[in-house]
Length: 137
Image (cartoon, rainbow, N blue to C red; front, side, top):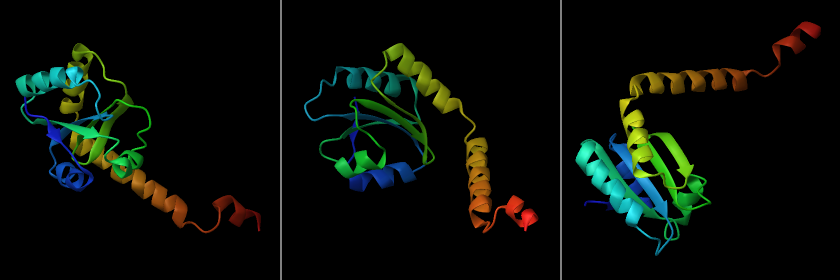
């Protein structure tokens, strides 16, 4: 099965391609049995998804960027949005359900929610004085 091995340099390109990226973070020398099971599922059932492995020991900056501390970790991204990032590798049946759910999400709606949250945050931080404080003076 085809499992991408991603380095820090290749990560940005992989994330930018807008595809459905499923990443298994593991330690060097970790058992890859579950990764092979995931590979069979992804390539057999999810045509638009890519399965990748990142060896956290070899990519500490990338692991730090995602706050990866405990290994292994399963991470799912679509269109540069992290949809799932949890320690542990679930059983194949649970993995299949998670991939289906992540694949069925309306990404246009998610991107709109992210933009709305950015606007709200920007509005809050652009204020110099609390509106209540203005009324008290």
